[in-house]
Length: 485
Image 1: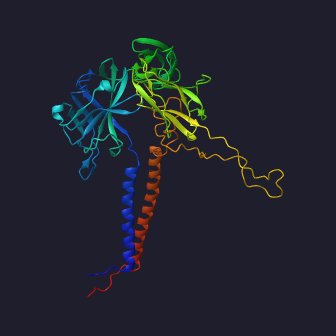
Image 2: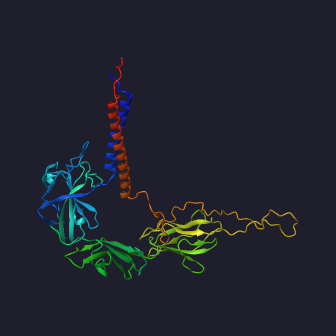
Image 3: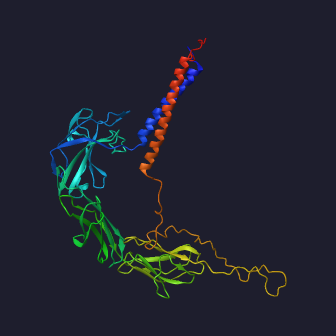
């Protein structure tokens, strides 16, 4: 056995480390960068027309030139399964057919593939009528996907993410291959979504693409509420007074030019017209109190709760207090009224609520308790000044007896039910700006930069190792010692 010269060992070790780092950099780069979509041509479809509502809307054969990436990691590859996607107007992709395996692997210069279920065991076919929401031209993309779970890029990390493209034009239930009017989509929002009977709601229809021109009709079932012109990708409309109950409203886009834009319709958005789920009044003045009002000990209020079961008896309690209050029975409309509830003198200051039972869950925004804040007890601070005529020695005694009530604002009990569906307050449970998800692009960019600088370092280290080896050879440093006995 021979032993390398120490200098040669160091140089060889440096070069080996550099190669390892370079390999890690390549791996990090492939994992940190998002897949780069790249169209590699068009694909053909035979037949070139069909119906959105067919059991398999796109059937027959597809043909394409080129091959899927010749990449394999252990038993995972990207050249034995194909998937077909529809590109929606907002740019997102939806699966139309996945699990295409006929004529796999797709490593030849061209392929013609059958889409028949019998030729593709396990194929998954989706309804185009669930994906396409209006007339217009839609892009289809044929992709090579991971054979393990058929993941859609970039989750499947297809090398380069190549795809083949084709366009179809949809009119009603029919589609044909070719390009016509651009497809559109409509998203509808209502503000507020819960109103009082006879109230109104502002409807906003958002068009994609934003440059689409035309008008939007707002429909409540079969009733036309009104129309608005699209401006800057939006159409706004305020409803007339809505009757009590649930209203499922849709926005229907009619293009100014059917040759340029396709029509589309939003999914229903519900607007509910109902009386407030609860109300609290000052008993003496009859004034309607705001959400979570400040009450005083000894103050009497009237509490009204709606959405209950007619004829059912309901009990009332004060959170963290043992005082008993009279029961109340819901009337024919499901409304329960406690005509007089007096805040006990021994109630603890701070956040609390009127806690009734059982909960009334009918309607929208059910409430489990009626919140209020009990004011801190008033008390005078002990005097630190000498009393008149007491001589030179000040007294340490307070002028009045100090309150024994706690003043830290806590109710001393569980208030977990105080906001279970209350309708007047601002919920902060979901507020703020979350940074946990971050921007996928920013994270990928950071990973790419790290990979870039690591790659440069690896190259430099490799070059240094090679230089050491060559220098050692030239100067006779890379010699072998005497064999060990």
